Length: 83
Length: 179
Image (cartoon, rainbow over all chains, first blue to last red; front, side, top):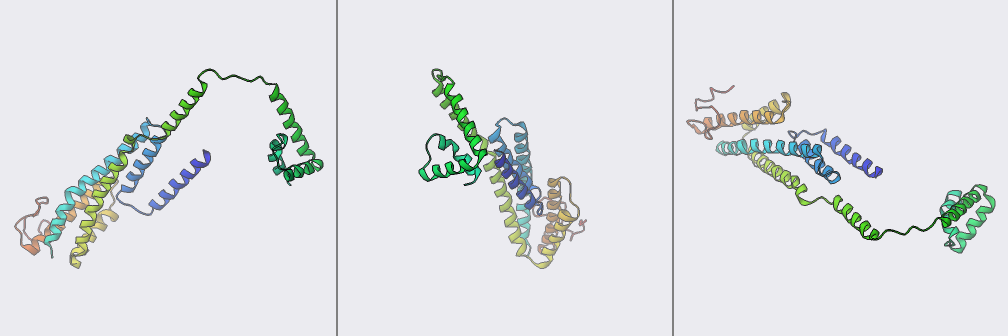
């Protein structure tokens, strides 16, 4: 059990180390919060901390998606008009 | 044979489960090693004590309860499907974001150098030089400025009267609203 936990921490450490080089508008951190939140639910289903992490991650992604859906199609229309 | 290997095999030796070569090797080692002999004596004493302990009869339904608890434990470790819903929801949102980014970037790369340079300068300004603590605000600011820039370019090239998409405040006066 202790060995398995060490391996999990090693994987988290590796992922965070890789992500420290990139910045994708925080999307990468939101994705991690959802993934680790769901993994935490496997251990304790009523964990408020895990549900909070999942909710915040999803809310963040919804905000980013909404902004992208509002602006990017309009910019694409404009780009199609420009030579 | 080393002491650690002998100690691992002592239990099987006492129960008479060792093959002949192993049994001979253990016995040969015992003759030379007092530590392992003491270990063997201690194990023999333990066995004698255990033999004296009265057998405990399990209560009725013990086996059924044990299996039920084992099944419960297995079910507890398997997460039901509603708990996995955040993952497909997240994947869907990511897919929407990346489809839009891919469509946008392919069109940007097809445009002239001046348009690409202008958009790049806005990107650097809003994503690198002046990062906002709150990421969505940075993205919104970037989208607004980029949209204004593209709208100005479209007006200059197409002689449009006003903003084609009705989002920005530009009104077709040749970019006088540029900040």
